[in-house]
Image (tube, rainbow, N blue to C red; front, top):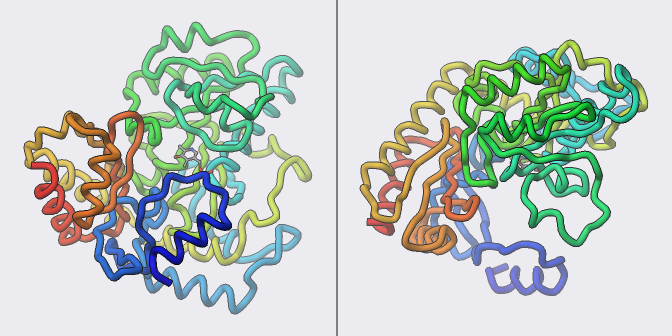
Length: 392
Ligand SMILES: *Cc1c(COP(=O)(O)O)cnc(C)c1O
């Protein structure tokens, strides 16, 4: 099918909730994609931080195929090898104690919220269920995670929302103290706010929040759905902030393109949820877990060091364009935000796409770059050349 045929089917039969790019992607290899018309693109999106090993990775595809030919799904009524193996790699790599597997970021955060509320209920009883989140955050699209998201425009239409969220200004302990109270059981935050505009939190602030949580027995919940699994150059972003969270969530990059997510708890919280308290039909699916095992095997310390180096190389490359359109460059590893001035972030994204480079937007004025972690220097150079053409 060509682009127009696909678009016609979408418009006739699909709920129109997305502002899609006017391109139909057909196939890819590495960090390069081709649309249905055969046009080539360098990909700085990885499907919103998901395709960590790029497209058509052979080891990844083979693991999925081989698992599909053994057993594609059986549910958590049975043990299977792929999820058990995955947990044994992921949990030590995160410095946590135990993992729960689900299917998406919002679902992972829902689980994390459940852990915080039940931990507090078990120990202190009712009336201590509030979770403080940060303004400009993004935590998902379910009724609860929308309310956890600290942006007013997500709190429309779908009333009544889940109660028990209070918002604080990022990087302000005063604002956090103003939100504090006897009814609080946890603080949830992204260490680099992704959808909100690629805004890294200050190290001092993050450590002060962790200290306050420890003093008050609030759980520190870190949403690593976008920052996790190698994206920032460490296995998880929190490992570069000098803190040890109680619970972290992960999703996007974990299975390299299959729907997968979950949360991990520390020793203190590993037994909060007991048999029957939580579950997921698809959670820990063998094919998705097999794919995630390939991702985990690829993310060696050497590979992660390359993520840091390639991120620095890309940021330096953008800075050296001395483009009048660039107002600033933020981020860690291969999670990069470029402040845009003189045109909207969407206009810039569209111009880059027309010239053969796919990028994302975030916040009000940020071009967001989340290339596959496996991107080559040659592919980064091609992307930078296109940026130079469009942005000079
Ligand atoms: C993408 C994202 C989510 C939501 O993940 P879904 O898989 O779309 O439900 C939650 N938190 C953060 C930080 C994200 O970037």
